[in-house]
Length: 181
Image (cartoon, rainbow, N blue to C red; front, side, top):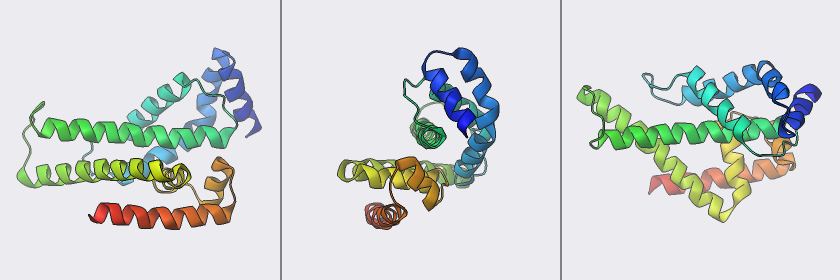
């Protein structure tokens, strides 16, 4: 953990070699996050786990962030993976409405459209939640999308376990209400 944190700090200070050394240390955890995200996607998703990892990693090292620690890094990784999947869903949904067209069965089209719309609706609901309470939105992002435990989420956000549990409960109720409309 200390070595990852030090590599992150050195990378922020312009040490490209540190960023090159970082990937082997974080790859397994990024793969776990990506698998967690991809399990929620449709079975024939065109974005593969490895592509999600690579895209997220490229965006992570391009961030101009003062990395605090390993948990901070993975918290932002979870957010970026969600953003990548939402961008992919929005593009897929737009393509369905007349963009690049590929032949699919009616059942497959309905399933793809529904899942893309669900992910986009969830993203919109999370944005609404973030306007009301940024911390609750981050808790959902880390717990639901990142697959982090209560303890891991508390560490990433620097808050108590009880606060995470409270935010998680309230945020789920808010999202349920928003998505039920």
